[in-house]
Image 1 (cartoon, one colour):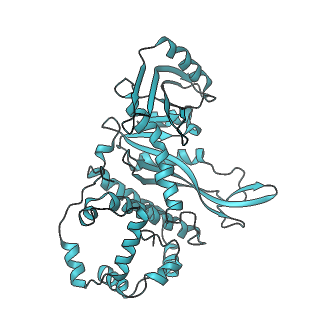
Image 2 (cartoon, one colour; image 1 turned 120 degrees about the horizontal axis):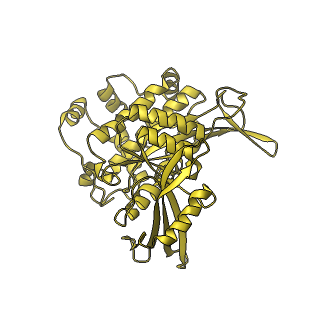
Image 3 (cartoon, one colour; image 1 turned 180 degrees about the vertical axis):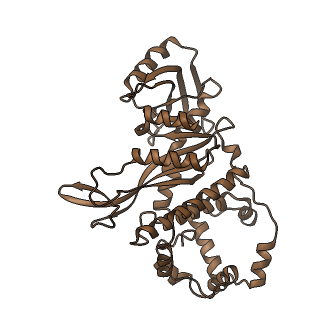
Length: 397
């Protein structure tokens, strides 16, 4: 359903429960019929969401252990994990006891959110590695759940599940502060966190003063994508910061001024700034800024936006059962992972070198092949038993 971008459980019955589709399903899974959407919902309501999460984690662990993504690491060491929150479901009436609520102009909305930890790469991958559901413990909580609370839960779970993974967290300005720095220090993680001009005043002030005294901490470059895009960097290391709990931190700040033409061809300069504790030099500053800091946007663009508007139906209510909803969510993340690997994999590119034109076209072809290609049980077994290797083809993507 998710790989073929069907968008609803109803489409399973209309498009997949007849013809060659059923025969292939029988050959692969040794059962008599293709399950109905209602059957899926009923089965999922009896599952443990933690096991669904573990499937997602296990798939990511396989990619990491097989060194599939080693070339995508920052400083040849750190995997960039971007964390960001997003709404998934919105209702005019209470959906379940865990709904978050917001009241505007006397009207109350009930909604669900998630905080996602996605492994993001410069080539455009955005793989879910772990999810924290932002939800209330009951209908009338004294305080609602939020992204910050979810972050601490997610960070603890991520460290427990991947204790030795070298991580660089890429976060927005909401997380800039002592508690996040302390979590990263205890976990042994690095970070690139957006620093806004009005946040952490002492750090911003010291950066402005010291950067004028360190003219050697400058670097200018033009983007490899076009000479019209230029970036000017400046940085300051070892800025002392004491948080509200009197913990002392040694921080570094990177500023990037990027100049490029807008839609009308007028040159426009945009400022980006991050706080980190990584050592910085002229050789590493652009790499850290672009592949550790700005790459955070991929969790929104290649992640949530694709899942909401690219046919996966992230904001569609596939079920009214809160447990089933989590299972559907994890299956969506798995499908998105598989689709990205399919789109970048050498297997399909060798067969269709001209490509598909878009990810939706790939999903359409997959749907039509599944529905109409007639394969016997012997054909299916021959395909499954054949040994082959798939390599990522990122340059031509």
